[in-house]
Amino acid sequence: MSKENTVVHLYTQWPYLPKPHYPFPDFIHPDYQQQREEYYAMIDREYTFHSEAAREKHKRHHFTDLAARGLPFLNSLAELRPVANFTANGAMIDDYLDRCSLAEMEEIQQRITALLTGEDTREPRGDGLYRPWWALRQEALACAMPERHYHKFTASIHDMLVGYRDERPYNRPDTPPPFEVYTLIREQTAGGLPFCKYAAMQKNYRQLPDDVLEHPHILRLHALCSRMIGIHNDIISLPKELSREGDVMNLVKVMEHAHKVPLEEAYRMALAVHDSYLKEFMLLQQRLPFFGDWQKTACNYVQDLGIMVAGVYAWHTHDTTRYVPGGYVEGEFTSRH
Image (cartoon, rainbow, N blue to C red; front, side, top):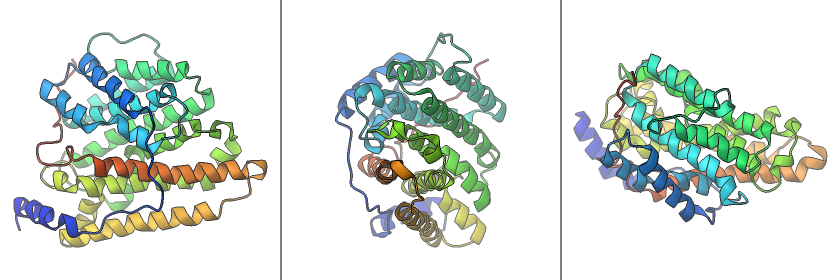
């Protein structure tokens, strides 16, 4: 079957294929609409290096809703703003940089990291490739994000950008990586780890000591969250990615390539991996280690990690514009030199 026929067949079967399902309730932050309005204005102000058509597509995707649905219990718009802008700019830059080289991605990653950490405190001039990342740091300072939580958040963003870079050797030749390599890279690029770190800003979780937040049991839950988010993104985006060369960091494609099986069987194999991670998450949630006086707070934090994963998936199912033919913003990167 040709690639074109495969995509058509998949669209035909799509309503009948099993999908991810989470046993967690669905919420959205009360300030989501105001955050959207800020997002639209930011795109028009900063993303002038994108074509007008690309900017309009980005607006329709409502990327800030990912944060509003994933972290619905943040206390204010001021606390939502840094993680919402991270989400929007991370997604839009990922789209934009599809065509950049490994060396160019390395340079961009280093510059963004310097702005986030405060190593470079100067406000970038010119178009908005870098300025939103400088602004994210100012927003985190403005909402009094504790330094230890901000450090973990920005370290995970750094790792995500490194993951974007590490995808390049597989995307360029249009060859899926081995499952083990996919797992390492996708855990970083899915965006789930920055969300897990920022989740400590909700409710009273910022009071949790690092003995809890950095406990191996909790870190494994973070990894499972990011892997589930990566796989459910792969599943939702599959029809779009089948029609494009270079989109190989998708578990369905990895399974199809590794096991030489039909696409639908590879899809079911990918979903089985996702469901095994969900099963492990539920078991670890039920069997938390002893955290003393922090036990109840830790239990609530982990429950909200599950709500976070379900919220991110809810964005995927509510958005009907990104993962359809013509809905995705193709890479428009040209050398900055």
